[in-house]
Length: 491
Image (cartoon, rainbow, N blue to C red; front, top):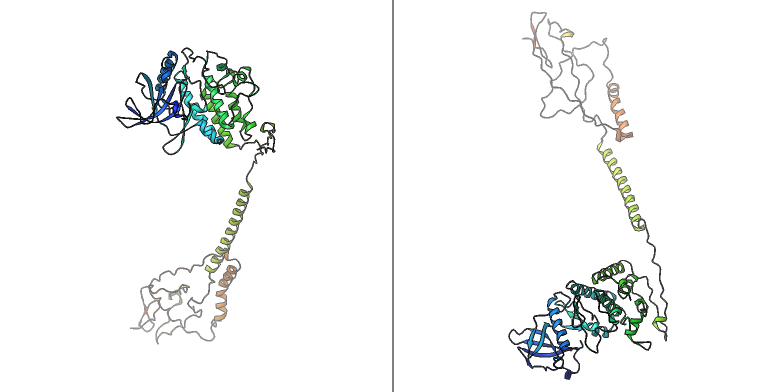
């Protein structure tokens, strides 16, 4: 199928009414028919109409092949196969309505420049899935070539490859159909067994066609071409070797090249068993190409030399570096150092706060305790002095500041007077020094080692118990009332 060129080759003209359709413009022309863009006069839908040529209506073989194409095309439903609708008969000619696509054929795209390797692989994968759908229905295409692949524009502007033209397709269980004076298929893309005219073809004939399409998308060169050395069919029959695609494009990876050459094997037993197996090999090659950059070096072609004369340089891959990255080691060392410094600073701050909290114990707030026994008041005349055993024992002075809520301590009873001949009172300074010795020793120890200091707690003063007054008979017949902390009064 070719693009519109000479409008005289088309039998229908723009604006012409054809059955219930209005011809909009011609699209392409092939061996058996032409394709037009037409609008339905009832629904207004745009479709592509494939119409058999008038001069071929008398050929039973052509008419049979065209009807078979229409029948097979209407059975296939796949995103990468052009959608065909129910066939029509208009003015005695069989017409196949198909979806109208916007875009260009693969042949037109390759004429504008090479494809990226990743783009070529993606198109090949889509075509392999479409051919797998054909094979699942027992159909072989037999004519996979760039002119029969359409690169349609999707709703979002993406490229959607679609397989066109089932004119050469056949069912695997059917008889061989050929056109007199023509070879079914295109010589540069047909399999060797197809070029030899064998009739027992199977799905591997399309595997070869997929390999040839991938080869031309990667290199913009056909795997087998006619030249001065012979025709393409002669080379196929004689088994001429195929130039590896990396000779034309050195950046092609080894797994991808292996997949393409396996699909193009001369003997079908050496090819992939199915189109799905070829798609799996392409997927694996694409994954390995993403994981490991191509090891093929780009060769620079000197002026006046042919690309085939340049050697292929293989650069060995760099060995993997194992172990912990140096950056992680530096980060770990810095983290440990900062942690140690933080712990040290925290310890110093803690020691300083503890030392400031431990205050030296002083006697500034302690009440002064008199060590000299209180003077005794002589009893009135005629009274007998109380016995020493009857006097109340003195309480130890409290070292804790009395609280405002605690009851005030009773004053001790007056001590009896002593004569000069009796034992003198002890020195107050010496007694204070003696009493302060433990405190000074504790303060010195705390200042020397503040961490071992124990908190100092003042002894709790036990509440005093007031004794009941006792009556005592004096020597003169009077009575003494003895009360702790109060003088005896004579009635």
